[in-house]
Image (cartoon, rainbow over all chains, first blue to last red; front, side):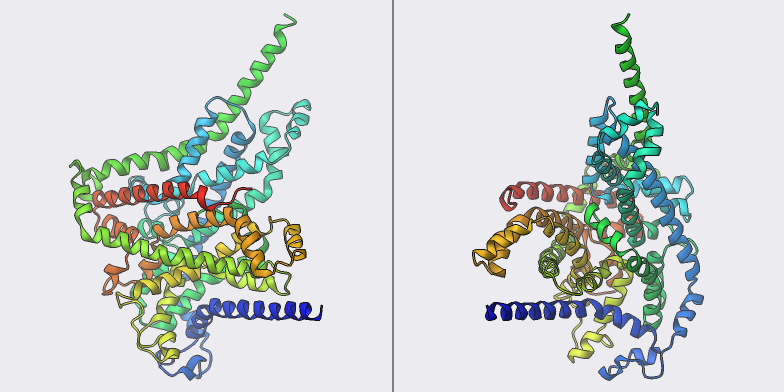
Length: 280
Length: 300
């Protein structure tokens, strides 16, 4: 018995060692990003390993400088607006379609839902050239509407919400229809509030996807005034590529908002990804 | 009359339900048709055209673009690059994530802290991630060469640059895979393990005889989604590889090549051809994966 307990304890120690080493590896890039961001360029490019910490003080003013010289406020605003409208559009259209596919009977339903499933299997790169030409023809280049454009509807979200609505008990509506509610009232007052967790999953998924996307903002918003954080970073790298503290300070500024949101809403993030399991 | 009335009422209810149904799916379906289905056909059409200026005045050239694309060594090179990237990202990303998920599924203290850390790269923009890694890999001043006392050209030596980029991919995706594995593991009933413990099966035996087979649907799902994700990689390569990088040709993915032709050079027809080739390739891979599912996935 003693040996079993001892073996158990040894196993636990091994597990902690493995987890801690992995955690360390995962954190090194973050640590180096922050440490470089507060150094002077001179310190950043000195090849002495003892210079891991900044030794002429922590230059937090690097952040203020980057914030000013590359208008981060505008990048934040553009990114936030894109995320906001994409989340609202995706949740709105997907919850309606998800409800209809999940709980209503109508002719052509199976065919239409097959189209939804087919869309999910097509790699999105094939949509990009025509979508770009549409945005261009609508004179929406360099606008928030152009950034939101491909995300107005979502096949994946429709599928996710359909599953959510199907999971609700079927007699919910019968009681309501006896009370004289029509389909729209039943949807708004009874069913939609019950799919909150699916909506949160879809919202997080949509926000994260929009936040991380690089190619679309790069092609539709080429000016620094209208682009997003991701595409803004790509532009900055072209301009200040060899000023490492500047680059790392901008990288920190670009990742910080989402990290803060993630740490606060961690449970929803993890559940959202686990239930949606979508193609990120 | 008494017989007909309820039938008529049912029909009008059906009609009303059909109206609501179509009204509810209309925004999504119109959107999908305009934004996704029309573009598929439009891309295929453009791949058969030579692009005029500003995307107008396309002239039909038949399969000429396909002949050029399929005869260009860079097409095949970038396809091979993409596969090489996938061969690093998918297996390592999946195996490391599975090990971490199994460890975190034990009743240990502080698992939520570890989980938070491993998932952190997932909420970072790949553009920022790639910038940080590019700095870590810097030949003159980067942390890796600095600490290891080496002088390796991590991202500009064609022989190792593809591995370096693959490592960034693995680091970025571990947390995502791990979260999916953890939710898969939580669906395995605990009494399977209790029964195995009574029979004297230890941790590693338990993993191979219980966890691995019961987790195989999750594993298969992750491998499939990550494979498609890896075959369409763009952000990392775009951010890490400068246009002047000598290793660019042996690292750039097919989507990177597509971006260069379609949007940097403005040759939409050629870009459309590349993307059609890519989609055809992914369709073949998906088909092979579907056939492989029967062999690798354990069905209860």
